[in-house]
Image (cartoon, rainbow, N blue to C red; front, top):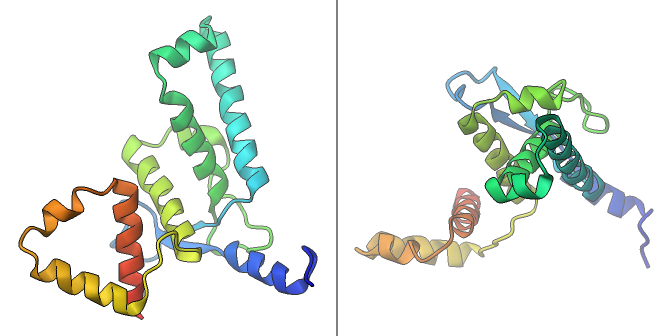
Length: 182
């Protein structure tokens, strides 16, 4: 029976914490301008949530707002700040040691200064890296080929695909691409 301290489990977890390399958003034509991504631990995600809430509390206090009224005015701000906190923690120097990677951003304030498109693309790259490490949607090779052939022949493929949520479609496309590439 294996326990958490088992070397095999450690190897699995270390593999999931490997650093993925992606072009920095907007620099797809410059292969030298890469950013590293790593999957966060549960405690890092919890820290990101708590830091997000603390940041909003400080912001409200500085502006003399009540947090509840502030959230009513902009209910998505906590989610956006949480995404920023995830990006701050997940983005690392791609050349650094996976066991103790150097952060890409020096401070959370640097992440907050990004434009909305760059932040969104970095957050989506993090989600994509999660799916590469452990796909949420997994198709067998034959299922992937069958789906690709069906969509290729179907004149109303767009109508079929519009029934799915964007996150589901992204996961499906990633799984399909991974299967067809292998």
